[in-house]
Each structure stands twice: as structure tokens, then as C-alpha cells.
Image (cartoon, rainbow, N blue to C red):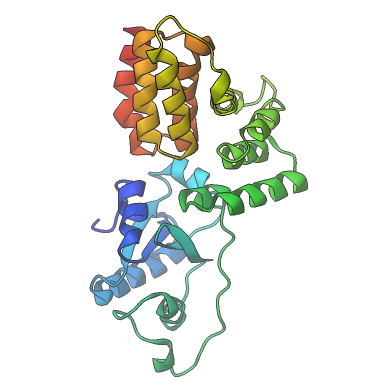
Amino acid sequence: MAYELTDFRTDVLEASMNVPVLVDFWADWCGPCRTLGPLLEKLAAEANGAWKLVKVDVDKNQELAAQFQVRGIPMCVLVHFGQIVDGFQGALPEAELRQWLAPHIQGGVAEAEELVEEPEPTPPAEMSVAALLAAGKTAEAAALAEQQLEAEATHENRLQVALAQMFVKPQRSAEILAEIPEDADSYDHAQHLAGLAKVLSHDLQALPAHANPKVPEYYKAAIEALRQGAFEDALDQFLEVLYRDKHYDEDGARLAFLGVFAWLGKEDPLPKAFQRRFEMAVFG
């Protein structure tokens, strides 16, 4: 399928820097999806590049759907310049869909005033913590996660707080992750994230000394890169630490790797790109 998702970062986040990207969560068994899908494809073709359609089959991308907390389909999210600008849930009729798209698109779709009747505006779907994080809305993600935890203190909501606060308040992430018990299904995931929170919480002026001064230098550079969201650079620096002393700072580089992998998720291409080098550095 021409519109099918292959890589979220490339297909959605990077593409959204050029044109709005409409992400459609759907499934073969979903009746409303069979109505909305062809309509979206028709409008995308009609738009002639003014916006991009990316279709995400929730059955084939279960982890991604879970990260976005997709509770009902079809669910659509519009991303532009890396930010979520709107969304809706359910199958809109063509006139309403054109009306919904018009404010976000320049050319390629019918303008709102061309409609005979102006439908009621469709409220955006509630965005998930993961969706906000993917769009770079860290503050909004943290606020939403804390609200959800206050409303319902589940292990899943604790994880969402930890994910959202990781690079803002890592101590808060560590605190909330410590509340997830060993018998919880999410315990292993929580432990990986806790390792990352520990590393991020370091005072960079008080890192452990080492006989090889390059080790703390690389470690400090890696943490600084992490705090800036430069994951690839950070992992490169952590590899340099692992090559020299895999046990430095109580296995800090290894814990950081596992934590970054857990934070990004298996759908992200970065863990896939670094997995082999990481394993060779740790076990080689």
C-alpha cells in the first residue's frame, strides 16, 4: 500500500517539516475504517503533495498503537513541523473532512467556504502522552501524564509519567518507577527506564574518577547529549565508555543504553541501528 507506514520518524516526523502529515490508525476488520480509508486516499491524491497521508495498521503495529494509546479506530492525527496540530476519532463524511483539513492546508483541498453547509467543528481527539512526546511537546506530555496518574494510579500511568518526565525531571521519573513492584508486567521495562533516570540525574562535576581520563570525558559528553535529546550522539559516546570500561559508574553506560532503547521503543530505528554494536561492546 502506497500510504502504509514504514518508519515513523522518517514517514511522519521528518516529513512533517515539509508538509502536514495525517496519520490514520486503522485495521482491516474495522467497518468505519473501510469508509474513511478510501476517502483519505482520495483526498491525499487530490491534494497533489499539499499534505501527506500515512496509514498505520494497528494489527501490524501493535506496539506503536499501544504507545499512542489508541482506544478506538479510526483515529487520525495531523502533524506539522513535528507538532500535533489537530486530530479526530471516527469516520467523518467527506464534507466535514474537507472542512477539518482546510485550515491546515494551503491548496490541494477544497476551501471551507466552498461548502454549501458549514458543519460543526470537530473537536480533536484526546492526544496520548506518547503522541505528545513524539511531537516534541514535552511539557504538555508531562502535564497530561501527571493528570492521568492523579486520576488513576495504575502501573501504566506511572510509566507514562516516567517517560514524560525523563528528560525534564529525571529524579521524578526514578521516584515514580520505584513504585512499580516486581510482580508487575511492566517491571522489567520500568527497571530499564530507572537506569536511564539514574544516569541522567548525575552531577556532571562529580562523576567517578578513572585511571583512563577518557572514560569520564566520554561519559560526561554522553549525558550532556542525552539531556539535549541528541540520542545518536549520546549512544556513540556511551559506546566509547563501554569499549574502555563496561563497568564504569556501576554499569552506567550499559544501563543508559537499555534505558534509551526502552524510552524510544522497538519501533524507533535508532535501537535497531545500535543493537549489534551495543551487544558486541557488552558481550564481546
